Image 1 (cartoon, one colour):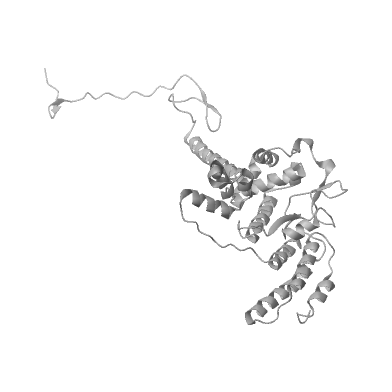
Image 2: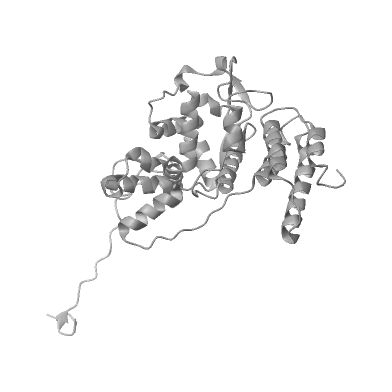
Length: 350
């Protein structure tokens, strides 16, 4: 008998022809396209390679959409929207929004943060309504849209109250739904979840994508600091009243790190007034933009007078001009002659 050849003293393996795999006698639904197919192995879940690639891309998109939803839910903008819905008592203050109009509203909100110095001590400006949320003796509710919202100093906004002179964007109470009612004791997180259902997840995720919405540092800091109220010597209400900068300082103190005091300053009243007049001029039928050249001339005069240390326009006059401008933003009729008479003693050629 012949011996089999060996390699390194080991017997050579017998070469056997591989048998073709037998397809399973069963069917499955493709995990991607959901079509029925006959798998070749027990672990096959896609009918073809293209379906596997599609499913991976779909999973990635879903993960990104989930992340965008989470970022929206924990953003300061979402909490602002929830607070407005609670104040109005209905989600219908967001009636008629699209992805594009939500982005426009978010731009107004970002400008409001910039005007206030991004969370510095003390709030200079508020987000005011042209058409009030709850005007006296009216069946209309002011909407939270960029055409009905503007950045306004705290004092003129509080002085104005819920008076209505005209313009803005609103909805009749008969057009609101009982299903969209928001109670005063409802949690802000719960309202935010309802806002997402109101718009639809697709609209919210696309908005969060375009606007690049990010979670608020303020909410994160408050959540952490709530665990150390005794050490901080604060009540929960006092903690929630702290500015974002103050919250950061408290975190630094707890961790034993050096506290850095960053100076943040907001925008000037006249600069904000010019910005909001120009923005609303595109949707208002009255010619509110006609006030802008006078305000710009006032700014230029003040800047030049400061540089050469000459007589400036009295602050009392500037305040009168600004108060009139904010009344115009709230819907009061334009009166350029009134502003010209105030500024004539100081500005030439008006």
